[in-house]
Structures are given as structure tokens and as C-alpha cells.
Image (tube, rainbow, N blue to C red):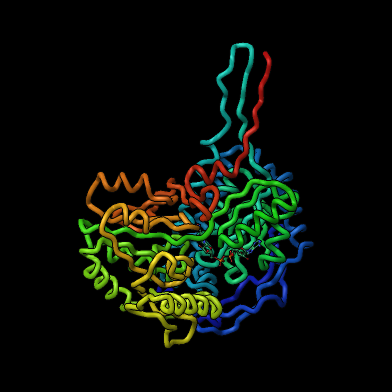
Length: 487
Ligand code: NAD
């Protein structure tokens, strides 16, 4: 069965999801489809009162269901049933997602959705495997390091991979025994509602996931500042991450996980497999049209192979064909909004004005929707806007080096340290660079995640605090209490 669908026929769950009920709302922020620019509905904006209602519902459900105190394997069972339903209903979920977002329906079913189901299972398995510890004390005492859930976690997610990002927040928080109030991006909110509806169908107590729709200033601020939100888990821009820290500092101290922006380098040495490197590098800036936090947007290549590598990358970039996200054959995504596309274009123009040379691209695409040409910019120094700014679009820069020291110096970014790529066949150099690169992830001779969900992801510098995925993400949703008993 083809996954291609007619975008005018898809029913959307427009409203907030509280206590297991969809609360329909009319009006809000106008939404346009990235693939053709057509206005199709409004995103409701939850008021602080509504956020309060969602938090109250989460708290009451936690108490009534004793979710944090049930046999841990019961949490595993329910979350696995949820993962099964997500897979079984992948086509509907994919249509809701593809309509609003930049994710092509063909990539969603086998990619984002299948991986999200797998990651929920991965986190579900921690529920009965990570717990409290006995501390080494003298014979006259018993010391315990008790592990407990926080209570209600406030989660906020971006628009670039809406289902995956919701899964990264919900999976570990629920497995660890918490309830969650989730605010998805106002540009792609409906797949989160559908995910929450599936969770209730799978047997998760209604009210354990509440989803409030809205923007950052109104709904997001009310959520992160709510006194009953015990922990904040955020993925988005460094700018919004700073605003959240400020709000949390003003309204009450609480722990935060912040997964923020990036401007990741890819270093290529002359001894690398250049064909493999070209595919990985071009793929990382054309996948989702470069709208990925870890996109490897700064190519730093050894001088002797720079022309050869650039030619191979250019060929792949030029092959990108735009298509609507509801066409199952589409590989190249639109940009999320007209505004974001204009921002990409203005940074590219500023980069050229500062001396950069566009080897390909550098313009909006002549097609319906918000597409932007895959763009490769040469002749850029460290102060060039295309090097400094997180563009969040299909724009790659190319710089060359003559020595390892030079490569390392170019790779360092003043603001970001999210991910990095290294292409070389020299093992000793691999280890040297893995130690020295200032980033939370180093990919060697590849530039993508695998399905090894045990590897945590997160940033150095202003790319964030804490980790998603891995054991660390589960533990970040538990807090510890020291208990010392005199015997
Ligand atoms: P954004 O920061 O504009 O918005 C992200 C979310 O935060 C949205 O839900 C938004 O409504 C909300 N928000 C904005 N201001 C807020 C505030 N003051 N208080 C509370 N909530 C607020 O980011 P975006 O444009 O949706 O996504 C792109 C950004 O996300 C990029 O910078 C990208 O690098 C980053 N990102 C990071 C990761 C990671 O794992 N590090 C993953 C995906 C995206």
C-alpha cells in the first residue's frame, strides 16, 4: 500500500489533551503547510490557567494510579504496549506528522516512528533494572541511596523531528515513574496529541501524559515556571534554553535538561574513504533539509583532497529534488516556514557579502512550498556569518587545513559543541581527535546515529546541559535520597 496521501482529507486532533480527553479549541496561531504554503488550521494557545489544569491532572493521576510506586515491570508492560500501538498505527501517525512538518511520509514510517517505538521499549526496560543502592557503611548503620521519580516533568519540544523529540522526553520520564505535561512546538503540535491518545489506548492511566498546545512566551513560560513542575526537559534553540533558565531562576529552582543548538564540524583527512565521506556529509545537510540539531554544516577538509571531495559533495547536493511531504517518494524536505526560509536566505546573503562564494545553491527553490536549494559556500573565515550562526537549513561551508593543529582550531566553535564528524583511516589520529574535539558526540567514518539507543546525546558548551537517550536520560528522570539508619 502506498503511503502517499491527500493532505486535504486528514482529520487532525486540534485541541489540548488533558486527563485523557481532547479539549477542542478554535482559533490560535495560523498554521501553514511547509510543502505548499496552504493555511489549514490554527494551533490553540493554552493560557496559564489551562497549563495549571494540565499539571493538576498529572499530579492527581500520579497519586491515583501510584504510577511511580507500582511494580516496575508493570510500567515496562504498559510502555511496550504503547510502542506496539505506535507501530501498528504508524500510517495514521505519519500522515498527521507529514501534513504539518518537514518530515516526508515515506521516511517517517520506517524511520522516525519505528525508531521512536524502539526507543520507548528501550526506556521501558530500565524500569525494573535501575534502582536504589545500598551504601558501604559500618556495621552499626545501614545507608541507602534511594532512587525516586520527580513527580510531574514539564517537557518542551521543537518542530524538526516532532515524534522523535516527544519520544525522547516521554519514554524515559514515564519509565522512571513520572507524569509528563508536554508542550510540542506550535508549528507541529498534532502528532504529540495522537501519541498521547495511543498511550491511553495502550493502558497508560489517562492524565499521565497531558499535552498543552501553544507558543513559548505564553504556554511554555507558564509550564516551566509552574511550581508543581519538578523538572524541566527541553529541546530547542539555545536562545529559548536561556529564556527557560531565566524563567526557572525567577520562579523557583528546579533541575533542567537542555538539548540546544549546534554548528557541528566534519573533519576529513586525505587518508579517508572520500566517497563514503561525501555521501555522509551531503546526506547530513540534505536530510530534513539540514533542519537537524546535529547537522554537520561545517566541512573542514585537508587541502590536498578538497577539490575532489567538494566535487563529489556538489554532485549529491545538486541531485536533491523537492517534493511534498505527503508524497511517499519525496526525499528532500521543505523548510518549516516562510520566515525560517527567509532567515536562511538572509544568512547566506550575509555570508556572500562577507566574502563567501556559493559553489551551488544560495537561493529559494522555484517550487510551491518553502524549499531552499542545497548550498555550499567556500572562502569563509571564522568570523563569516555562515560559520558563526546556526542556520538550520541545507547550507554547508567548506574550509581547508594543512595540519592537525589547524583542523582542530577550525573545528572549535565559540558557542556550540553538539556533535562532530571525523573521517580518517588512521586509528591513532582517531583517538587523538576523539579526545580533543569539543562536542558531546564524535562520529568517526559516519555521520549519523545508529540504533544503539544506549549512546547518550547532548551538548558541550552552549549546546546544552544533560543528555537525552542512554542510561543518562533515564537517570535524569529520577532523583536520589540518602537514608542512614542507626542499627
Ligand atoms: P525554539 O527554541 O524556537 O522552540 C523550541 C520549543 O520551545 C517550542 O516548543 C517553542 O514553543 C518553545 N519555546 C520557545 N521559547 C520558549 C520559552 N521562552 N519558554 C518555554 N518554551 C519556549 O526551537 P525550534 O525552532 O522549534 O527548533 C530548532 C532548534 O532546536 C535548533 O536550535 C536546534 O538545534 C534545536 N534542537 C536541538 C536538539 C538537540 O538534541 N540538541 C534536537 C532538535 C532541535
